[in-house]
Amino acid sequence: MPRQINNIAEYSADYREKSQVTVKSTPITKATLKNKPINKTTTKKRSLSQTRFNDTINLKPVSTVETKKNKKISIQEPQAGCIKPSPKTKKQMGFYRILFACITMILSITGIAILLSAMNRTTCVISNSPTFTKYNNYIAPVVMHNPDPFNESQKANIHTVISSAIWRTILQNGTDHYKEFDEQGLTLIPINDIQSACTDLFGPTYNINTNENIYGPFYSYTIGEKNFHISAISNLGTYIPHIEEITEEGEDLVLNVSYLSRDDKYLSTDESKSDTPTPIKSMKYKLKINKGTNKYYIYSIENI
Image 1 (cartoon, rainbow, N blue to C red):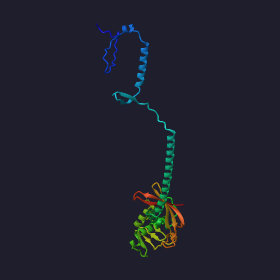
Image 2: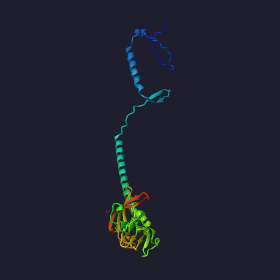
Image 3: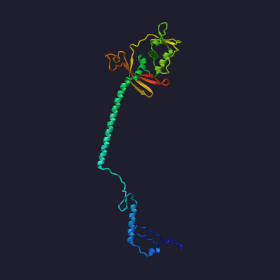
Image 4: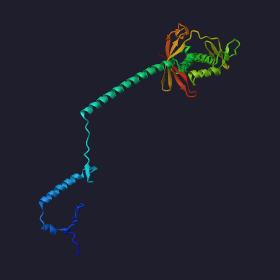
C-alpha cells in the first residue's frame, strides 16, 4: 500500500542524555490530532520557549567556561557600543591640544628667527664673497667711464663701449702683453682683442664697425688697419664699483652698484679706513646670459 505523505506529518526529537533510554518517535497523523485535544498551556509554554530561543540566536558566544563537571557554559559577548570619554578625559585632551598648539607656535617663531638671522649672516658673507668681487671686477672697466643709462646694449654710447673694451683688454692681459708701437709711440692693440672684450661686456650682438675711422679720447682706428692705436692713459679721477646687492629676475642678474671715489676712506688700508662706503651715486646694472658662452653681459644700465 503506498505511503500517504499528505495525511501523515512525521516529527521526531532526541533529548537523550547518558542516563536516559532511547524513545522511539511515533508518527502523528491528522486523525491523531483530531482525536487528541490541544493543551493551550503547553502551546503557550512552547511559544514562549521558542521566542526565547530565537532571541538567543542573535547573541554571539565568544568563549566557553568549563566547570568542574565538564559542562561548557556559553558566555555571550555584550553588544558593541560607543565609548564615551569621561569629563576628566575631555579636559586632558583639551589640555594636550593647547599644549601642542603652544609648542608648535614656539617652534615656528624660533624657526623664523633662526632663518632671518641666517639670511642676515648670509648677506654679510655674500657681500664679501668672491661672487661680489668677481662682478665688481667685471663691471669696473665700464663704471670707471661713468656711462649714461641705456635700456639695451645696442643703444650704449660707442665711445663708452670701446673705452671699456680697451680697459678690459689691458686689465685682463696686462700692459706687458702688448709691446708693439706705431711711429708716434702709441701702443698697438689688435682689433680682435678689443672686439672680444666688447662681446664679453656688451653681448654677442654688439660689433665694432671697422668700416669707418674711429677717434676717441685716447684711441684711434683707421680703416684697413688691424690695430687700435692707444695713447697713455690713467685711471685717476675715475669711479670704483661697489656692489650693494645682487638679485635674480628670471635668468637675469640685477646689480645695485654704488660708485665710489678712489679717495673714499672705505678703500683705505690704514687706520683711517671707514666701516661703510660713501657712494657718489648709485646705478642698476642688468646682466643677461649669453647662450653661446653661458656667461653674463651688461644689457642695460638704469638710475636708481
